[in-house]
Image 1 (cartoon, helix red, strand yellow):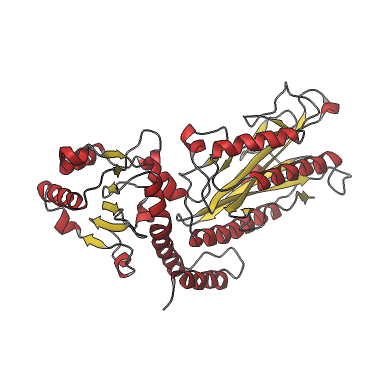
Image 2 (cartoon, one colour):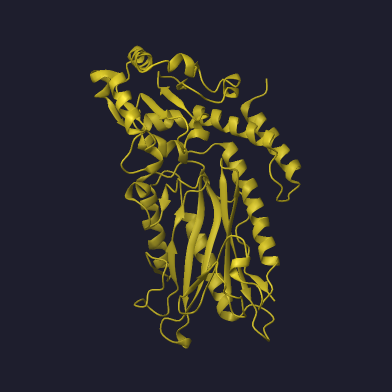
Amino acid sequence: MITAIQKVLTTIVALVFVSSLSAASIHPKNLAEMLKEIRKDKFDYVLPKAMRDNNVDMWIHVIRQKKPEPLALDLGGNAGVFIFTDKGGDRIERAVLGIADEELWSLEAYDLFISGEEAFEGDMAWQDIIHDFVAERDPQRIALNYSSNNAAADGISSTDYVKMINALGDSFAARVVSAENIIGDYISGRVLGEIVLDGYFGLEAAAKIDREFEKIEVGRTTLAEIDGNVFVRDIDGNENNGNDYILKGGDLITILNGAGEGIFVADLGGNGYVLRDGETGLPEEVEKIWQDAMTIREICRKNIKVGRTAGETLNILIEKAEDAGFHYTNVDQFDLNADPKKTQVHFDLHAQGVRWMDAPRISPLGADWQREMTIPLFHTFTFEYMIHMPLPKLGKGKHLYIAFHDGAVVTERGVEWPYPPDQGIRIIR
């Protein structure tokens, strides 16, 4: 019998042959197979923990047809009522009432499926089916996809919410809670297939960044002609971003770019320095800012671990950075009141995979709930931080700036790289 892990490994081999280590897109068939394996594995390994950690016996997720829904790919359908019930044991029961991808059922992703015609002949039929289904399972806590904090978890419409509450009846309606924590934990929980996509799309994005750096012509190329989020900051902190600014000697340029197919998106960055006339290599101050950046990278690598909250982790990183002689700033701007001898650092190490889910977020940015989330095993995140290095010889407030946007995974061993992080400042002649 072919196991799920064997299927994933087979898909990995297929991805490598299809890409030939280039930036070619994944064959749609391979991508579809990967998505199905990811969905099954997340149902098997991530969903039980997400529900039990939040003391929920049943998760009901309502998706209205023709309404955009962030979890459609994760759950496998663009419309319907998706119901997950914890009956004990290793497996969560999965049922869907409505319209979904028929190919899912051949892979046994769900246990029960009631088609749209049977489930939605009328409001009374819909309400009867929901009530009887829930009553038979008698859950004590029912999570429903509404939220006042997490927009991704707030997918149910007002109309469908009222219908669902009426269908449940007074007794079960009193047991309804927000599904925001379950959805957050489910999305942030990773399985092997997602790590594979992280590495593949990371290599693809790296190749895109290389191509953009290669087409730069000093004195002619503008930031607008380079694909991605492209920016240069001068020594006063003024930023040019994606505009008609023409690259010239002495510029430190950052290019951020991404690759993905909606299932998993990897965003990363690269840095370059434009040589001035007479320069043959990186000047001393540029070498220094790179070394400072590598010190911060190592501090982060050693201190981001599974099981801590993002907020706890942020506090540890701040403490370690300050112990190492850095000044922490909670905004991505040079602090004019800080010690002029200290290099400054700002952190925004947010989740990577789906662009609408930044949590857990090791950062002063974002909502409190993003920092309150625990870092799970195989957390994929953007290794994003910014360095402001003072240049006191040039005057107060003068500084160099460099930004990093690599990808990383938190395993039982600590932080590991699914693809090489930024290896150095490219020299642009």
